[in-house]
Length: 410
Image 1 (cartoon, rainbow, N blue to C red):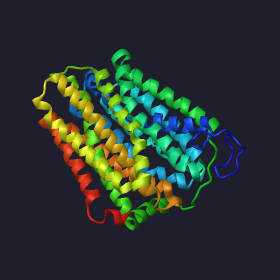
Image 2 (cartoon, helix red, strand yellow; image 1 turned 180 degrees about the horizontal axis):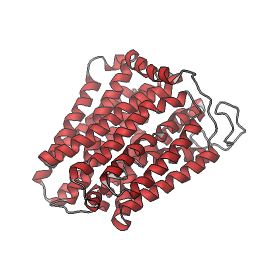
Image 3 (spheres, helix red, strand yellow; image 1 turned 180 degrees about the vertical axis):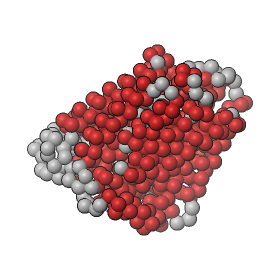
């Protein structure tokens, strides 16, 4: 597809995948979302070896994922709404260039201060993934829009989860700096493919930047369904981030003494949950997304609560319980996310970038809070503190979805 073609122009006939777009374009969108969001998570399995290499304390190293997630939340809030105002293709290309540079800076960082600064920029520019999802919804034929967005979201979710597997392996065998360099190369390839393969997009609004951001608050005030979705997904994300941002440090110590590769391998468990997420989409189509949000939040609560049994088990049994819990809470969280997107995108099709920005700002504020609170909980109360934090935050999300009037707000 020509890179000068309007997203709203009539395209020449092209072979379509089952999802309704040419297979190469579908692959580009899913890969771009996956590699873009993966940049947020490469550091997490490497924290145990990274801190020792640059002489930083566990507490300071814990702020690497915190600043990354905070940067992502700020980027979604301040930059993602621009997708309704400007050509999304140009935005994606600019962010890809900045992200590539930030990853190279992280790989060359001589101190924790520079690494923290690079982490913030990585978070800001990795929001290109949140430009790709609305782009997919715009490009897709109406009859296949759900399938296209679902495919792109599968790529995004696998990027989140498999990034830990890859980074753990690379850090173990080639060093943590090599992982950042490889990540920069992957983003450079995605940028080149997007330059050649993405069409241009016409803006859907001509609001000035200040008015564009101001409309986010208006959407927030007008739609209770949006508020509930952002709050519930944010609370679920607290536990998710607390688990993944502290897992490597916990496994590095007694009684496991495992390296970054083992921590990264847990991403395979999460990937199993993500691959099952399309089932949640079908349930949402047949029974409504409200039910799926409740089932997803309930599964997250159960999965985190089961980790409280860890002190009663032998080390090998503890690892098995952690794997089972990771599968369960990842499946629950991704199911809830897909259902929340279904609810939010149906509010106002003309403001999807802004609605998406509000939903994911709440989500990644939860991620940033989870990283910070998880590091503090691990330092003060050990792994049980992380387990309690994750369980309580998930219970809060379930309470939001069960609160009387949730279905009416939708």
